[in-house]
Length: 432
Ligand SMILES: NC(=O)c1ccc[n+]([C@@H]2O[C@H](COP(=O)([O-])OP(=O)(O)OC[C@H]3O[C@@H](n4cnc5c(N)ncnc54)[C@H](O)[C@@H]3O)[C@@H](O)[C@H]2O)c1
Image (cartoon, rainbow, N blue to C red; front, side, top):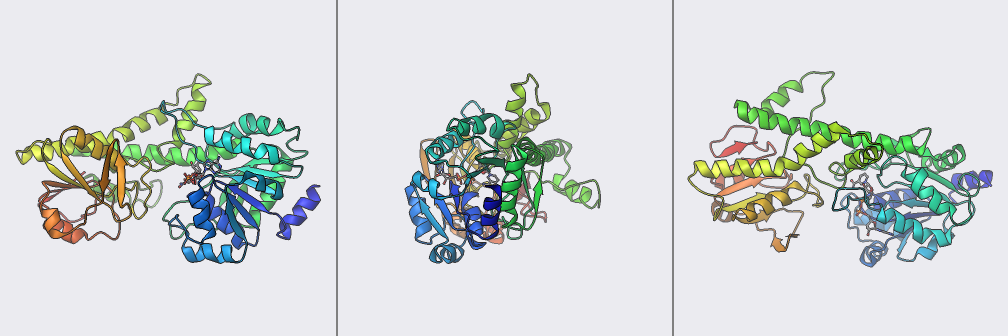
């Protein structure tokens, strides 16, 4: 059976089902299709499935043209119908892995996807989990569920984990040219899954187990979370020392070895950096180990919006104003520049905290026309000279490229710049 599967992969006869067509799943589905594999996308959101079939992309990294190219060639179709899984040969799961209200891993999306796949499983199926998760999920949670069908992993079906590294908005590093890690739950699974991915990727790094692959992903994002926490705390310390943190970081970054530049900001956001490290620390809690570095980093990063609001309070105080009753414009609600994703965005916390203190808050974001925070709905206001002049304070939380920063600086009374947009000193700009 294995020889036939490998031959099908080589000859593009392997039909690939991608479960969950979001920021990760859609680019992956398009890349497999572009490489000549027939792809069926299974997406519970009917509007997304329809949009794909109409060649309209809702993910910035994929243009309508790129999508239409594979849809029109009949290589990519989307559906809400899980029964299509039985016609597929490989199943790649890219559903969300958020945290629960109590900040524990929420595997309900993975489990729902696995439950929906089960009735359609057949001999020879290759299943690859891509959703970021804690070490052991593939072996200890997914594998036993799949084996309830009577099919045995490594003999009848194949199971692997391959973490996703996509960096939304990145023009250089895409799905195809970013090296990818993959590990199966047994050598047979590793071999078959690696053969499939090798056809599509420029470089695949195969590891000895799914657990290693799961943990490698968590190391990557924990590394980021901890380093961002370090520079966020440095920003707080530099403010107390009356030193420009940005100048300090630029100076340190001239060291050609042993230093990697990270920059502070109003907190961390997105579906990965604030969440993934907590998957690792949660797993360690089950083994009575407290992952202290992760806990401290998470605490520092989570507190940044509160720190930003504290600084705003001080700035207004110097202007003999209180937060209550002040008009504040928040520039940028997406969690990073040039994307529309607002998941876990610290700007939302900044807005909520300012509102709680009685400020009247508007926002501007060219990528996010409207947003709901708590019970309140907001629409992005236009960024004109007259409008900007009317606010007591402007706070920059996302440094989108398309914003007219000069006009903003020339029109605003006071700007609190948490992103170092203004590198040159200016009397009305105060930096984090
Ligand atoms: N966004 C990123 O930059 C990024 C990067 C690396 C890894 N990841 C990881 O990839 C995974 C997916 O993240 P994402 O950002 O693509 O999420 P997303 O919310 O953009 O996409 C997930 C999609 O899955 C669909 N879905 C949910 N349950 C489903 C089900 N049972 N069946 C079919 N479809 C279902 C949703 O409707 C949605 O369209 C997560 O584990 C995340 O941590 C994300």
